[in-house]
Image 1 (cartoon, rainbow, N blue to C red):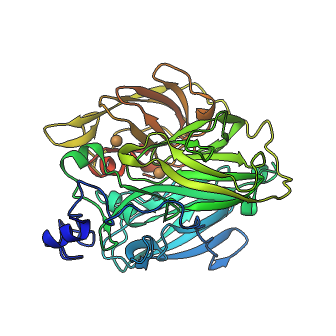
Image 2: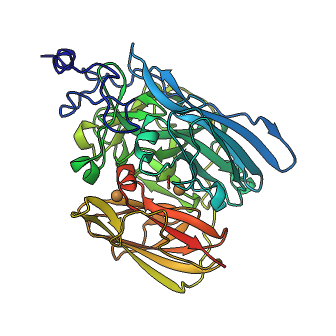
Length: 488
Ligand code: C2O
Ligand code: CU
Ligand code: CU
């Protein structure tokens, strides 16, 4: 029987099935076990890669750009011939891109026209606590909040996304995420590919119901433990798109904006086999440029992480098609998108041998151990045995101090651990030094199953309360999050 018949027999009507407060707009997929979503397999490489529009400030003055964003529901077409209801910043999925400049303030008024409370977090930002988007610092439906971002930090690919307590997973899944690209003069002076050759790409997985609506499960049982994996992969909101390129260098700012899925990026020669030799020139990580470019043939990327690469298409003949692959390919996802080399162009950009030096941090004065584990009795994820409690502060680092944070994973799956407000430098990964692509400013790091990662964190910018958490959003919501307060 086909999927539509099955849905009919199971008595599922779009929008009719609610499963718990706040989730009524997401309809359970009657055939979720089979994970075919829309009822048939979608054909890859049918739609061009969408590029999120760049947001225009509503006003500017000598120090500040002011923006206004309204969060609201919208209908978009993701599957051919079907509408999908999303929750979007200004109704877009992904949200509009904010472009900012180091040292110049950005003020964003966020208006919530959604039926649930939201909180907006700038991931990677050194942000005063009051504007950081704490999970309980909510904007009620019909309300608004002004967020101030000082941008006292160097160029990096940041992103903004929802952070409401317990429902970050479903909120981001419905579409509440967008890019925030911070530039500075050092980076702009490097002659890297820029303008139309500097492309942000957010990779996310989703599952759709037969009517085109988004499917998101009730987060219990194995979903709570393992997180949720969609059965379609989208880049900038389109399923397995293609992108027409010239035979020259491009810079790609790649964000893993998936709820739980981690990828190992690789580039094919187009014939189904992975190309030999390095495909990517990595130039950046979460916190911007790394000290020197690194040639890599595969790059792992966990939820919340960013990686910046240059791909040089100049060796390829016009007509060449290169597939961006995921070597992990959990439940059948293998091809992410395709690059089609369609024209020649002269290229005056370059990738310099040194990019941005990485400062050496002072010796740490405090070491904190954080154990990551699943509490079978309470049926939730915990940090050092405790679930998230907005009334509890787990650590009080001193402003100006440097600490070692050591995450020890006592579970059989990877957890991408993220710290707000600070960037850190990895010191040790399972007993080895960080590899060339892992040296740089990070804010999220994959802690391997049964493994450990230590990092040096310098608490420089702000006093106040911040959170740290697993960036698998089902884990974060079910309660793998703690709080620290930076004190004088
Ligand atoms: Cu991108 Cu607290 O998260
Ligand atoms: Cu963050
Ligand atoms: Cu986790």
